Image 1: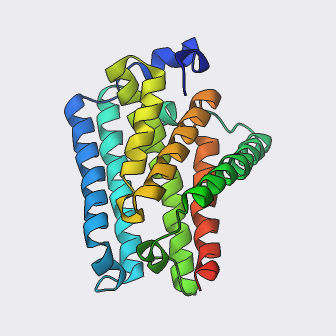
Image 2: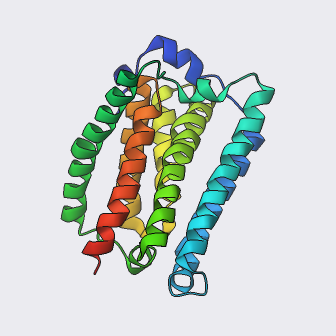
Length: 240
């Protein structure tokens, strides 16, 4: 259970309670995210068995996520909010990069490990749609890594940056902002089935807590990239 006392940094609360875009803008983002999720849940079988090749699926995800980021960036600019303000943190020297890398790896080991245990208890295994989109050759692995880097940056910016602030501004609660973005994050993965969606919801909330605690999306971006990139490559061999 997340309480308001657990999330009580006054300096951050002021910024999270200020919307970075109008309500209609957030509605568009939510419709796109949930619409693609519903499409993936309904049409997953057809997409996984063709006619859309894996490379085309990767490219579609990459393009869609950068379009969302561009849409967010254009609205923030009208309100005088910079992308750096949404991302937070700072890399002034190489040590800062290694610090955030270490935090990201530790987060995956501790948080991801705990959720792996939860997934085992729930018997939540990757479905055939998820297994079918894993890379199978060198070209697909290279593009998978590009897609993972895109997801690490774009999804953290969209969910832990943009949506967290929008929901916090709407509810006037930083805790609610973190929980609501986690719910949307889980709901945006409809193609993975309800059990994994629940786990992803919890993981998304944990990413939100990490970003709030550090006042930076950078460690979460690194963790997200490593989770997707390395997880996809390892999953390719496990799924054989």
